[in-house]
Amino acid sequence: MEETAIELRGIHKRFGDLEVIKGIDLTARRGEVVALIGASGSGKSTLLRCVNLLERPDAGQILFNGESIDLRAGRDGTLRPAHHDQITRVRAGIGFVFQNFNLWPHMNVLENVIEAPIHVSGLSRRQAVAEAEHLLEKVGLGDKKNAYPAFLSGGQQQRAAIARTLAMKPAVILFDEPTSALDPELVGEVLGVIRQLAEEGRTLLIVTHEMRFARDVAHRVVFLDAGRIEEQGPPSEVFGRPRSERCRAFLATHLSEDEGVTLS
Ligand code: ADP
Ligand code: MG
Image (cartoon, rainbow, N blue to C red; front, side, top):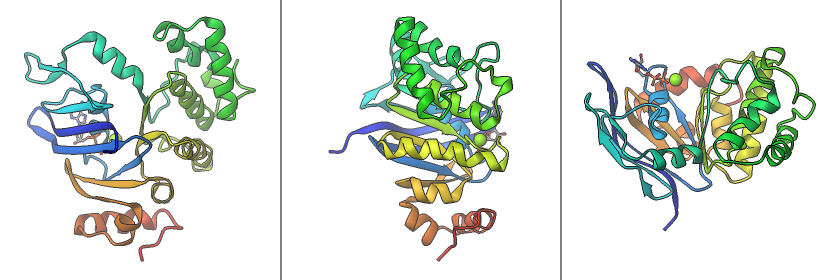
């Protein structure tokens, strides 16, 4: 049996009267790169945020490395972690890279990267700095460790945010449109870093509108439509021979915006 890193079972999520996630099962095996695609408003971010309970689902089960997260219904009916220790541990194992970088503006790059390793993982400052310097080299920011976020380009900020995520040694990294806030000329440097993580065999769940990147890097592409998985499969199938009419229509618009991918 292949080991699953993340397993979602029957996830439902509503905001008031609006049901946004309508019963989703999704698995990411260890080492698998899963691209989540779909129109704006289809529920991609909400689903991703349910994985580490940044968003509280109304129903469903979440497993991390085969361990079921204990959930308990709160007064409003949404499910929340039953055990503080368990969710703290699980969250430390799941990195999240946001669209808008979310670096702490009052800290320089190095301080951003060492903050959680020191305060959450309990590393010594010296150990945290050594690891952070290594990670900043890896993402091409070895010479920017003393810079404050406001003095970096969007691409540099996002690479710093990725280094910060890596510093927690997560088993899984979730990316929510990591390049959509960037000027087009800066997209490539961030995708290059993510591609490198994929090649290292990391488990990645990536919401993206970069179809060419999804085709080249993902092992599996999942197309979300109105809160349901409408189609999924290897990129060659989803991009090459989409079975669902909605997926075909979505790709027809999005592939034309991203030259270099053609529907065969
Ligand atoms: P996507 O990431 O695919 O664009 P989202 O998950 O952000 O989609 O949103 C799905 C739907 O849920 C949208 O209709 C959005 O307006 C709604 N939604 C998302 N977050 C909230 C929230 N906190 N409160 C109310 N509605 C929300
Ligand atoms: Mg979104």
